[in-house]
Image (cartoon, rainbow, N blue to C red; front, side, top):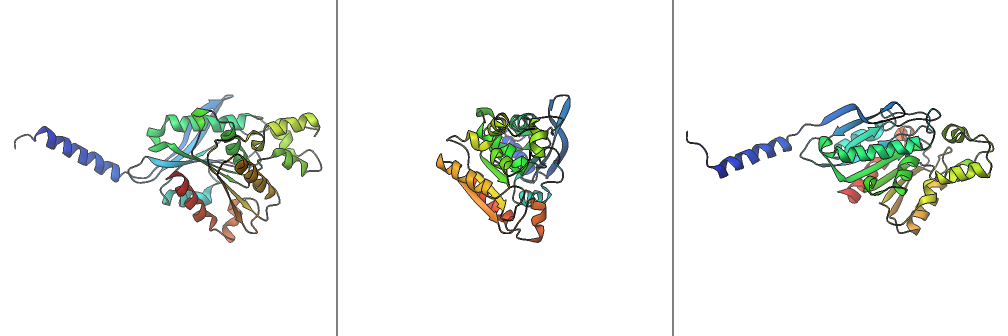
Length: 279
């Protein structure tokens, strides 16, 4: 058989490359090292759906009062909806208090964003379509990383579930020095100096114009982080022109895992918002 003309060979190669891309299999990588700090390896799990890509990606930051939680469990109710909707996702661990006090936790989130962008090709994701999703303490961290972001860690969208974005408001809801303030900052007395530290670590303190769109999700029955946190944060974001939607889950308490027996339509609403914002 005579050799194919160069143009036909190029078309054949392009066909098979396209075929391989279209039939690409879903891929899950676990315990990938995305950085190292204070002698600890920082780990992530990364999922890429089937298809051509590059895909929009959600970086997931767990809660746990800044002292516990992990990348495996806190978002388990969201992983399947995100995957089926065609989103890649990357769930990270970060250094926990009190062993590692603030700002270690938010610095690790920033490191993760830089790492994901630098390895976008490896994960088959689009570095211009990154959404941060955090819950509880993780919501505080994604909001804080966003409002203080330099150009290299800017993202396309932010979702904060039942997030204490005003730590001063959170602290004043306690009669005594809250345990999280001692663990995270080493604070033992709630004096003016302590409040200054807490205020400085609050996303609500650093809101500026030009931030990416936010979606705030909060249960109206939350007794650990009052829904007023999200209402006030939305007001402040909108005041500087930042698009911010608030999704209230009626009667829901703190922690989306506990919402499974109630209204679960927040999942489809989240996917709809992400698609509208990032697609």
